[in-house]
Structure formats: structure tokens, C-alpha cells
Image (spheres, each protein chain N blue to C red):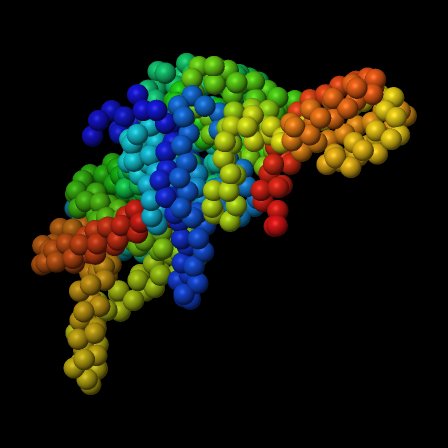
Length: 278
Length: 308
């Protein structure tokens, strides 16, 4: 990538951040993350006794004494799951507007008139959007990791790695938002489709149970195909949990097949954007 | 150096409905040549296909057939757009940016170095008549006229060789329009090709040397403003014309008006006009004035686009 191209990429990323600031999206996330960090810092007190047993105190009430590492890992996995599902839903909701804004008549023409390829324009916006969400996820995860580390001396890296998985799943869902945005210019439709994927995929993750309940072979095939084709948000959440709890990950198939889905969907979005007349 | 800044050959855009077999030929087989360094106006009624034509030059819209070249390069090439500065019609600049930040953003996309942008942005904002206060004011607070000015500044950020302006005078007061015209005239002196798409026929007539008129997607007329507005008739004003001669001249003229002893006659051909002059002089009449008639661009435009 030459200097001119790099400048254009930086400008597109910076513009996405500016728009996220202006729409209060960034600050909304930042506020929520900061509130959670403050909660961890001041409301929750963890007293480590003899280096292994801890008493957790929330709002001044003592909870059951437990193994400190297990306690920290469990708490971190709860935070990671909240971030993964609730944070993801919020991120998708907030990002849909950022994607659709680019295709507004009067704005897209000016962008396309610049000596920047369409692929570059869309990927620059995509990257900016991922970075807006990633900045907040990393802020919350790294912040809480430091809080837990300082309070308990437990510095396991699984929690930090889990944030990368969350960013990865968001980037896949963002590819869906981009594709729908390019196809229909509608943030509402993009949100609906992405939420549908977020709702359907955990159900499909129970494919063994579903297949037992289905009578016809073709319907079992449909479930199986949908499971393998669509992103595996639920399975990736289990991987995150395993990483935090220092448990071995049995299969990375959910990660790479989800990555493949994201790449194909983003590729389709770019292809359609290339061909579209504005 | 190519001879033409813009060159199109059989440029066509057909919009097809997704669900029915209906199609609309927005631009139909337009071949146009805009010489380097010229000031060229594109005219046409609403829906004639002007904006679609411009969008094809910028590769915003893909042509169905034909080709569009900018300085000898295919307009679809990314690098082919580098010499173009563009101000769109009905633009929606990001309202969260200040005038300064907007120019910085589009300047970066146009490949202008950060150091050059830092120097050039305040100069350009001052050039288009935006004061220091407006530099750091969000575009959401700008008036329509201010947005047009900052839009022009963004089109100039990378010192383009071709300026494509879609309704640049839209929403700008007459003083502002004069100011924009002065800026464009200075750019013309520097050899910048200016391609103007405007409904303001007076503005186009004042500024452009050449024009093309598009009607229903087709090129209806093109040429220099001088050629198109030069009328085909001749006007003679005579004084103290005797009644018998007046009757004869009236029968030969295409039109006439008589007022307080002054007779104004309009002849279709030079021959008729010369004969009338001979008659007037041989009858001892005085000739107050004579000359070739001129049409306004508006008259040419109306004649071209009005249904026969």
C-alpha cells in the first residue's frame, strides 16, 4: 500500500470515528463500558486470603468464599458473555446507520468521484466501523482485566484473547450489514437480517437435538446446511468461555467456517458495490 | 497532452426496472467533445439526462454502451478521476465535519499530502469567501450558500485540471454567484477546463464559451455560445419613412413596429435588408440603426427543448 492509498484509508477510518462521535455511538458505548469498569473497581471488592481463597463483596454483602482464580475466570466469562451477546446486539444496531450513511444520495457520488477504488472506499468504511467497536471492547476487556489483575493477582490471558473473538464475530456480522446496505440502502432491513442471524444461529447450534426431533431426512439436511453455512455465534461463545476458563478448545471449525461466511458475504457486498450505479 | 478534457462516444445509459420489462434511456448515444481549457455548459430541462451523463463521467453510474474518456483515459479507471474536481447537485456533505475538516477529508481522498492540505485549506476557504469563523463551524450550521462555497473549495482542493460543477449557483445570492463566477474565470485563465451543468441559462451564457443541450437523453444541439445565439435576421430602424414606402417595406419584412415616426423592421435575409436600405436611402429616409439580430441563450434553449 503506497502513501496516497494509506492516507485515503486513514481518512476513511477517521471519518467513521468522527461520525460515530457525532452520532454519540462511540460515547454511548464508552459510557456503558466505563460504568461497568467503575462497578468492578469500586462496588466489587475481592479479598484474597492465603493467596487462593477469596471472598467477594458486592454492595457490601459478602458472597461465598471460593478459589480466587476460578472466581475471576467465572466473573470474566460472565462479562465476556454480556459483551458478546448484549454488546454485539447494540453494536449491530449502532453500526447499521454508519454503513447506510455512506450510500446516501449526494454523499456517495462525491466519494465515488475521488481517485479511490470502490473496494477501497467500502473496506475503509468497514475497517473504521470495526475499529470503533473494537476500541470499546478492548477498553472494557483490558480495563476489567487490569482491575481483576490488580485486585487478585490473577493475570490469565484468556480473557484478553476472548475480546478478539468478540471483535471477530462483530466483523462477520458487520459484513452482513454491509451486504444488505449495498443491496437495499436500508439500515432497518440490515438490522433485521443481522438480528435474525443472531437469533437463528444459537438455535441451529442445537442441531443434534433438532435433528432427533425432525422426521424427514430433507429437513435434517436443511438444518445441517444452515448450521454449516451460517456463522456459529453460539459455538464461538463456547470457545470464548473455554479460553477464559483455560480449558482446551475441542474444535476451531466454528471459527474458520464463520470467517469463511464473513469473507464470502463481504466479497458479495464488494462485488455488488462495484457493479452498482448511483 | 490530449486535445479533449472530456470525450464521449455513443454514451448510453438505460435504466431497467427490476420487476417489469420497462426501460428508460436516460442518456441515449451522446457523443461530445470538450476541448482542454474550455468552459463548457451542459443544458437541458429536468429529467433530460444531464446528471446521469455527469455521473457516467465520474464513474458513479455505469454506462450501458459507449465510452467516456477524461483526458484520454477511460473514466472508469480510478486514476482517470484524479484530475477531476466535482461539486455534485443536491450534495449531502457530512454535517458533523467543520469546513476545515471536510476539506481535509476529501483532500486526503484526492491524494493531497497532509502538509499541502494544511497550507491549502485556509487559502481555499478564504478564496471562496468563507471567513475564519466559518472554517471551524460544523457544516450542519452552514447556510445553503455557504455549503455551495465550501463544496466548490472541496472540488478545488487537489488543483484539478477539470472542474465538473453541477448547479454551482444553486442557493447562492447574486453577489455570491458573481464571486463564484470570478473564481471560475480565474481558473479558466489558468487553463482549467470547466464543465458546468446548470439551469441558470444567464449564468451559462455569461460564463461558458460552448454549450450542449440535451433533450430526452439525446444531444439536441451543441456549439459555441456565439454561434448559437447569433440570429439569422437583420434589424433596421428608419426615420421619417413615407407611408407608401412603409407599406411596401412592411410587406417585405418578417416583422415590424412603428412608433413616433420611427419604423423598426426585421428582415430574414441579408438580401432583403440590403434592398430595404437602398429603398430607404433613395427615398431620402434616415437610417437610425441597423444590425444583425441576436438571440439569448434562453431563446435558443426554449426553441430546442419546446415541443414542435
